[in-house]
Image (cartoon, rainbow, N blue to C red):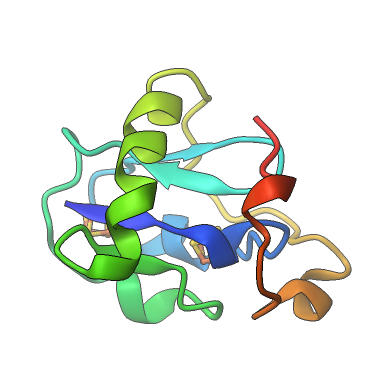
Length: 104
Ligand code: SF4
Ligand code: F3S
């Protein structure tokens, strides 16, 4: 499965949801997650993310985000249409240590 990781926080560009063939993205306060049982591993979302926040779960950088994607995709609402990203998304893109800013 694919996993949304740290750099989505406060960037939340949502380009990913427009390309997912099975609509398996779920939206929280400041990031999205992927439902691991619904993702068909097609990989098309990965290059679409301007923040490069989507990784296959086999990637070491994704490991610590796997459980969070599973947990919150079961709780948050589904999202299949791109909305307006945060006005300051660009400022947050690539900032280190965004994990503590996670907003459920
Ligand atoms: Fe959707 Fe494919 Fe991305 Fe999985 S890998 S979240 S199915 S676009
Ligand atoms: Fe997040 Fe990238 Fe999608 S920033 S909302 S994973 S396009």
